[in-house]
Amino acid sequence: MTIRQPARGYRAAIDPVLLAAAVPANAGQTVLEAGTGVGTAALCLAARVEGIRIVGLEIDAVTAEMARRNVALNGREAAITIASGDILAPPADLRGRSFELVMSNPPFHPAATPPSPDAAKALATREGSSVADWLGACLRRLLPGGRLVLIQRADRLTELFAGLAGRAGEIEIVPLWPKAGRPAKRVIVRCRKGAKGADRLAPGLVLHDGDGKYTAAAEAILRDGADLDSVLQQG
Image 1 (spheres, rainbow, N blue to C red):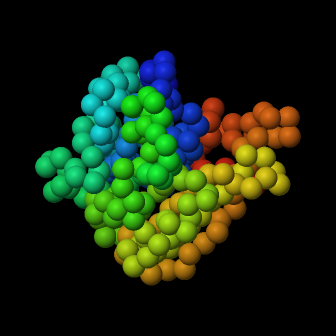
Image 2: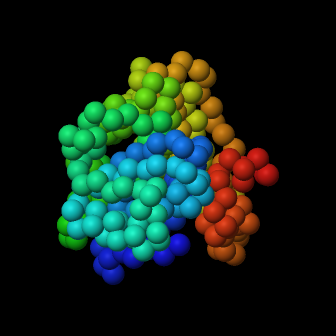
């Protein structure tokens, strides 16, 4: 898979790859990505699950056009459509649609955080709305019982739980530890719209060995395209 992205400003790293690996999708299902960026997560998911249909929604027009070019570059036009717009006020053709899954790598930094001097990076990383508003917008695009999958900062879990209360259940938290014994900086959050089941703290993923290299489990996802659940089951 080949990804082209800006030389400066916001650049995709491993977060969208880990997000795609966490989406429990099957062939024939429909997925919306809220904030697709240059299309990294959508392309990773399409490469892993044949027959899936993904809509990537991106607020920045220049970035959306780059995502379209990446989709074409990888020959995934049949699987992925890139739409320009805001998940908080989606374009008309999306407002009437519901999806079986929604995935998102939302802005990590609260609105009070000083913005990056790069406008595109600031738009991608700094919130323009509350966590609750973002979650509500994502959940509105889901079918009843549909799955929402996010990657977010671990220190924002309280806001995530508050935003999901009464809207989604069966919340699963998967910690992403930078190294064994270190606090998780990122978490995968998965939940089901309208569900009432128990929440769950899942086994986590250690990303780096003591020498700084990726662990075998992380490599299986980042290099080999494995899905998160199969990697966690292998221990």
